[in-house]
Length: 230
Length: 319
Image (tube, rainbow over all chains, first blue to last red; front, side):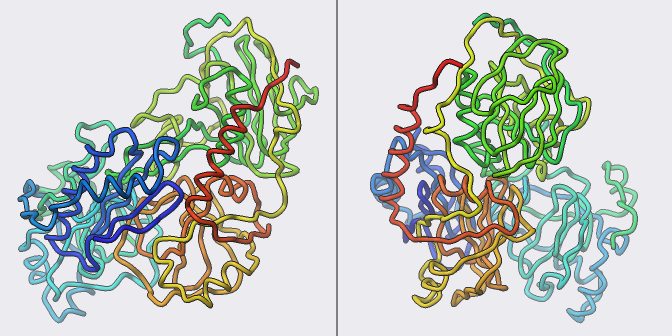
């Protein structure tokens, strides 16, 4: 574990150089423990793949004291056991009218479309981080055979619910936004709803599995086809 | 001061929204875990002064006006104060000074012209605007569709509710306490994050060069133009980004990330701009000059405490 300065009121803790389920569990545990031990000195925490950003109140505490608390709080993380997160199943309609990059991704991988779907839906993913935009959950890792680099020119508009792959990460776009990931399907479930409780169906540490559905099920579940995705 | 409950029908009506007017409180904190950014005023000192001149809590909901053009019509008796960038203020066609509170009555027209120095001004009202918070804050983040009115910038005919305030004195801030808005910013930087991925030569280049604010400058971040700096790594595992972080994408042109920044990202960062200087940067228009200087985190901490005590000691004067 290494602690670096991030800004005048922020330290970042690195738990490893690469990510893995074990490192991710450490991040998650540290988040829970530090929320308790820092109390009202804490402004916010940002957990990610292998790091935890700790933002503190500079008028209540200074960076040396925060370091000290981090050091004394996170003493036995190495013994962390991988806690099993909740399993969340998300329905996905895979199809070229829902995922305009599905066929090109299959071609590049030397697979059929059906094989790509089987590989994507056949794995259980871990929620490594939430960020970039409200409710955007980074899931990993997809089978190496369907890993795909980001598009060289990002799309101006990716529809809400788009299921996408970038390198070995996959995600569901929680809202319409620009984006450079490869789109392979659509999920009818809202990933972020400010009015709902909870606002998100998943949290960091959860496991996610995609369940293939056909177009009619997708529409029954409230999904909307966004028209042509360019 | 006597204050009655705000009715949704009394307050201020937006006649013209101008270039960009946003409802802001101090910001949305504690929600990074679900990917929400903070929002809040880009120039917190000016924002706090606007509230203080109205006798408010320093975090009360006010309006951040970028560049200008906002016109409001009052339907209450209250006081308003405008602080920040030099943006001509007229009440019923009469020019009025910034950095002080003014009485307004139903039917009064409050008009903000276009900035002559700086970019953002703050308009506060006694008691703050009464807006329903989302995730604990009224701060508008348009990219997230949260805060303010339907998560959007102010539009013509929006109704901004506030309480009636019949009694109370108008206050002004003496000139010696007002910040100056210049045409360049010298930003102190707390080196950190992937600082070590920038060679000594690259760091020296960054800290001794001048950069220009590019056209791509908004509440999310200020992209700068100048000498390329190259870290020894292309990207990193995505990680949390704090306010003022200076990220360097593959093109070598630094971006200073501001209040509406994404919460995590994968570009190397050389450090973070000191918050008091972020406000100076965010008051610059495209084309302005920016330079950087490294300081220690201890120095930044001391300076923050000094600035706070200066703010607390500054005394307002009756008008």
